[in-house]
Image 1 (tube, rainbow, N blue to C red):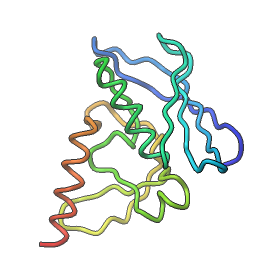
Image 2: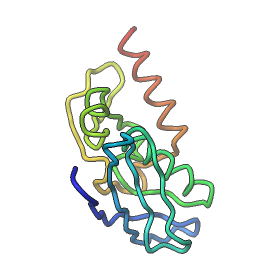
Image 3: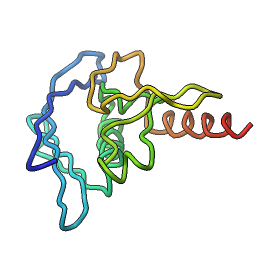
Image 4: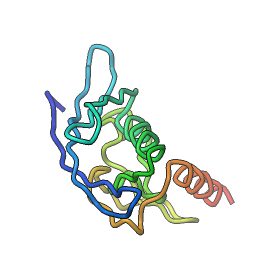
Amino acid sequence: MNGIESIISKVRLSDGSVKELRLDVSVDMQCQLWQIELVNFAENTTCFRETDLYKAMQTLRQYLEAKGRQLLCAGARPDVVPSEMSRSMGGGQQAYVIRPGRQATELVDIFDYAEPALVGTVQQQRDYVEAWRASLRA
């Protein structure tokens, strides 16, 4: 990724309504940090910097969850997780849809829209991924 990529995403508010928001995504190659900047929302611009894009999205999601909001994108689905190779080579923007007992094969962009019924909390996602990994070892 070169420069800043602006992504229009959606967020579900605590009252159930849906609002568009802009996320500016960039990477600082010198520091090896990915950044998601939350723009044009109720608050001032807020930045989330992490070692990969997937982690930055999780930090953004936790910030929104604390305010009763939920990001409506594939990266917020409990059944979506990037591989280690995707995280190290592309920041985790491409991730797999996972199913218990099966190796993942379907790739999605973590910023793709996801229906509200498909998304969950960061903790639900962590629990699902852990259960999926255990199902592969069984």
